[in-house]
Length: 177
Image: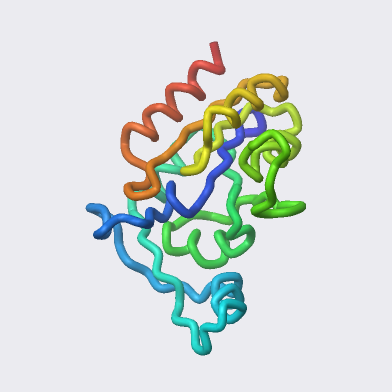
């Protein structure tokens, strides 16, 4: 298992689509009691925040576990991804990136996660699945990460699709060549 590449997983967008007019086919609606969400709502003046609505696909848990990777939560949800979402997807606990800082500006216009993910990967091969990856992130990773890396941008309205799982599998299998 240690020789498998890392799978850096964002939640909002890839695992839990958002922003569409309706729930994507196959997804189920869940209400979760996120402490982070609740605090953010309270900070914005919401007096009695409702639980956060998330759409999750029940097949994603088994599909993620079938991939030839070592999954890591690479999300602002941090440990709450394990606590709140993993049980709904039938997933075991995954390590998570405990960000040094979040949502900050980058002097080179990179996503706030990019440099931290490369540091966290510590030269290991990895695939990063996120809805906010831009070409400059992919280029920076290619120039600054000594190992193989795949960036897979997901449409936040639809989440992970079968073709994404196929692409992830194919990329990991190519590493064995």
